[in-house]
Image 1 (cartoon, rainbow, N blue to C red):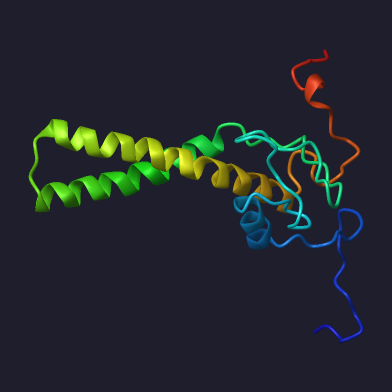
Image 2 (cartoon, one colour):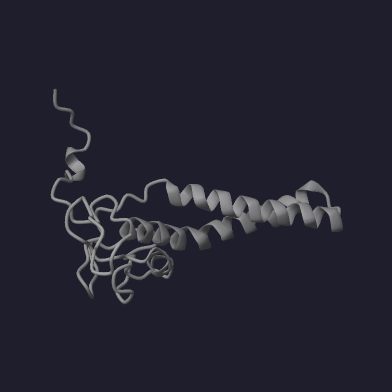
Amino acid sequence: MQRQAEQPVRFGGTHQEERPLMRSIGRGMKGTCPNCGRGRLFRAFLKPVDECSVCEEEIHHHRADDLPAYLVIFVVGHVLMTGYMMADMVFPLPPWIHLAIWIPLAILAALLTIQPIKGGVIGLQWAYRMHGFGGEAGERPAADQGERHP
């Protein structure tokens, strides 16, 4: 049994401040800095800022490459396919009318969800201290990632 005064031994360096996962993802989905929640996360539609203008948290080293697009395809595809199948059961329409309805809806839904999902992925990476968000000294810059040393 542990006494109250005893603390468990923690290996792996110094204690780092906790970064709440859901708060970080939520702030990213709102397009704000995952650290402070006040600075803007995007300077253009899908281009994140290099650093937060409020807290100066560096954001340039994120790696939200293809995951946001995959998540948009997954979410929008499932929602629209469910809507299509339910609508087809209630209102049997010719295929060209379904195409005229569902293709614009798919494009609109994808455009409306890609930025919040990308912000959420950046918030997830920040919360888990991935890809340089932890301030590790051993991380290599992005330019050195492709080089191999014998």
